[in-house]
Length: 503
Length: 92
Image (tube, rainbow over all chains, first blue to last red; front, side):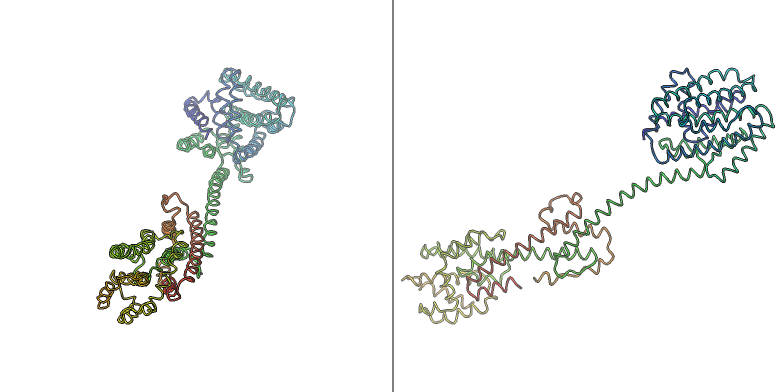
């Protein structure tokens, strides 16, 4: 907060002010003004700010006043305006009880008019303000007249202050209305307090009867305070007797010292308990407003999540779960299954071209990853025994091996294999298919046991694992072109098939 | 798929859901997403994870459709027995 610094200053000033007021009883009038101003409410803060500056000669006065007003405008909160209204009411209250006892003592002075002038000075012209300033002077003078011994040194500096104040108001009201309103409000707030204090101290020092009248006034004020909600207990206690002021001062100090940074909480100490509650309420509303904003953003975030959750739920089939956890659970499982499915399908896409050479029948029983590795090994293993065979066979099996090599590590299907591989192998694919059906072997007129062997291959092929069968099958598929050719490899082929049959 | 069918029902254990459970599941979900798998888990909001999950599931659906189309084309060109085998394998 930016006002914490001036507030703290005020506090310091006030703290050094109070011991003086307590110790020096006879000459406390000047200091007591300060006290009462403090007790009256938060505007008093402002007047306090002006006060210390105003005690020295007038030029710093204006500076101090001008410097304070922007600071006041900075802290424009609800509590502030509320405090203003309070102050008006308080001053009204004070005016009522001021009017009551002082009418007894000095009949020459109309305090009601004075106070109304003070309360609504911005509506009046500068003439009324001059009149009120004259009234203030007269009141000061009446107070002086009553107390010759202590007064004479004090009033001379004070009177120029007041005059300066009101002349300043006149100028301000003529120049700019808003600023004038602000200033006049502030100053009218402290001047009635000052006059009230003055009149009160005058009474207290003049006669015990006057003190009693003040007490009755104080009692009446407290009585009205019950009705009108807002009044300053400090003001009433100050008007009743100065002894009561000490605990009030102590309480204020105690309350102020821990919370020096918070402006409003400092004000709270000066307010009556009722308004204290309201100020606290304003801070709590501010806090709750922040919490509300936080809640709003939180709710927005949750709405977003819920929206996504709903979209997710639509994407997941057979998901009629209502709670989030099972929904997410389902989503995780579904995601895993989808990933697996995609993997297998891409593997299947890769497998289909690989099947054409004839290895495919041994793929299903194998696990997918292992199968691919096995296929690769088979391809590699095949090439080596095949190499003694005619070289064109190696070239024909090579695409399968490369396909297996492509598919082995990861399972994305190389796209160029799709059209490429089946095309050259189309003739062999036919042959391979025929080899499955033993038609080719029959047509080739190979050994008779092959007829019995090959059904054994195809039927229980899920049980067959290992390289030998793969090699055998490949041998068959490779033997087909060999068989078409007039080659002598058939003799070698047969002895290989027989041991495989025995396994 | 078999994995989908044999999915263990953990919903009964997570009857009363807390935010911790949700966060746990969301981070688990995040691990499945290749786009945001490598990011720090605390930097990705839950809504982001869910959004990515939706996108990823859609992309997987697309991929599955594409692959199944390709597979069916391939299998149509091949022998019916082999196609049956592969189909058996894939559609288990």
